[in-house]
Length: 181
Ligand code: PRP
Image (cartoon, rainbow, N blue to C red; front, side, top):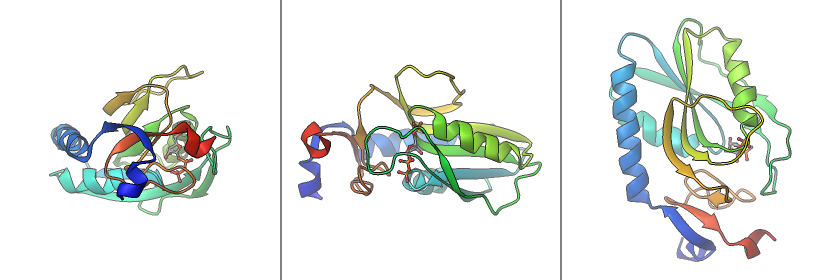
């Protein structure tokens, strides 16, 4: 772990800060969804760790499922194409769906996954993203629950990877440029 931490130029949010913010988000979500059947849906693989921590802090009844989507490959820039590799298995019709993402970057993934989930005819569909990158986008998507805003830098940790590494770090940090250039 220490070894991998030295690949970071800087830590943006340490584990404790992330945990505190997730507890706040979970309280808000638990208050907002009292009269329905909440289903959390995350996107493989980056969203897994956030989903696991958020779900365990939400105090109301809920279930969760996962969607497979990928866009980055081994690079730091999005390839511009999002490939759906797995649909949900839990029924979403008439239920309140909260799409849980690790990061809203170009927004391509959220556009594609949101459209996929709409086809399942949920009663409501909102988005919760741990990180929102402050950058220009051709089309914005409303994010109801936001963990943190970040500058337009490449970040890893807490589910986010570079070449499949760093996902297990309990912090979010900026990767040193020499690692990927
Ligand atoms: C990353 C991240 C988001 C998405 C955000 O996933 O986990 O799902 O990119 O980027 P966007 O807003 O530009 O679409 P990635 O496609 O790298 O797959 P992964 O979750 O398996 O790392």
